[in-house]
Length: 596
Image (cartoon, rainbow, N blue to C red):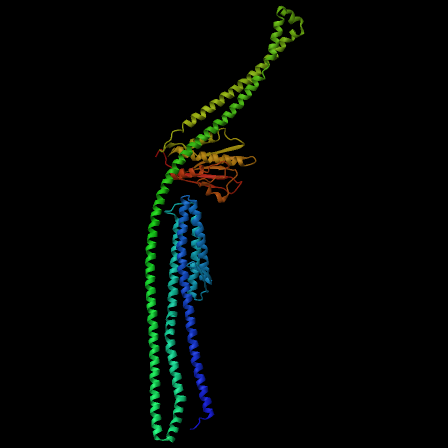
């Protein structure tokens, strides 16, 4: 038997090692490609999950913000605080999710946190920047809704802007989902093709290795065996040929059988994966149907609760108007009692001075002089001519008469003051009786006269404690309105102005009353003082029910006045440059001429 040269063996081994190395390198490259495509697919899936979770958080944020506005409009502070807290939590989660989508980081998905990497696709980056700006607009409009003076749930431009911004952001997220899915489709196709190509490539490499072994090893070995067989005899050659053919056929059959088994296993795995995907799709469809039914029930329940809450709000508004009327009558009665109390104080002072003067009258000297004359009655002529006391007695009586005349004048002046105070009390009571009739009907009213009456009731003596009253009452035609409502609002505003001026230290306290007609169909009444002023953060809170900065205040006057002004179709607003700089309250309502 002949032996192959050493160089041929080395070449054979080298070729075999190169082929194995190439096969391993191709397999590693395929695995790395599959891993990279899988990583990109997983990142796309995480982005889609984060976008869906962000859209769900946005819906919940919008719902909690709307419920907070409902609590604010109904003065349900517990609901307001709870929904504000929830809205704050959703806002923080949304901000974190948008930041993670834009530049990578932690994001909330289904109650858990996942890590996202920064996106490198320019189009996706541009859409993420657009969603970030829309999120800033949604946050700004939500803050404006919660700080708005307009607490109406319908026809509220701030709520409409908030809903519009939320809808635009939701649409932007949906568009981002579509872009991510569209971009992930090629990766998914490549991943599927690579996963299908790996078994085929493995089988091909195995066949290639088999062919190499067969051509470079088995064939030379077969040739040497044939040479050996030819040297041993024809029979051995024939038998070797038969065995060789049997081995070749067996190898071919084994390779074909192995390929068939591998193909059958691949088809079985593919069928199992397809069946699993089909079941997963069925479960997802069922879950979507359940969520749709739950959402429909939630919407119906929310609509029912909104209708019930609207009816409650209407009823509460009617009760507030009735309470405002009662509070107005109570305020007027309180002002009258206050004015009568001031006059009674003056009356008490005058009566005390009269009693003191009566007690100080010099009556004892007259009695003593009368006793002296009674004792000298037998000889009055001698008493007046000879006695020094008798000679001085006429001069004493003259001076005593002058003193008594002066005392009588002062006493008469005090009595006149008492009569004046009593007449003032009667005038205040008669004046209040002219406003005692309760009515809800409009009547011709001279607004300047109503303001003068309010000043007489609120500041009866034309200003006390150094307060200077400045009137600027334009001459207007008689207006058709409810004078009791106007009087109620003005008395509340004058009472607050008096308190603000009383709390202010120093002199130069001024109270201004303005009446003007800024437009043909509007009338404006302003109460201006230079008292303690109002902080800018409280300019809207002072009209809320129960809110007050006065010691002993009940926090209902300004709230009731605002409700009455709204019932008249008007507005009541407060302005102030800050603490210590005074305040201006402006009442505006529609002007209807009584003549027209």
